[in-house]
Image (tube, rainbow, N blue to C red):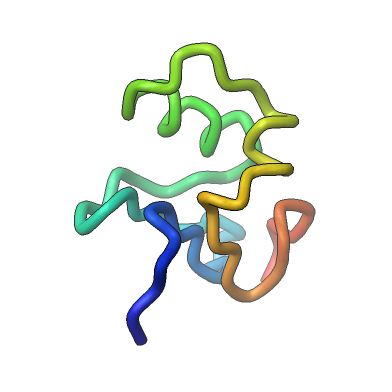
Length: 71
């Protein structure tokens, strides 16, 4: 399924981690908003914080929003 969002946070896995893709590259597994924020900062958005991640329309949250970290 194609997405128009440059960032995709996939549904939680068995351990609660969520795979994160930026563009066409998987950048890691996030276990909370701080991890997603760190991935965004590494991608060039150094001034982003957790609230930017929660509010951003650039991010597609699959399998639950930014509050969902358990399977």
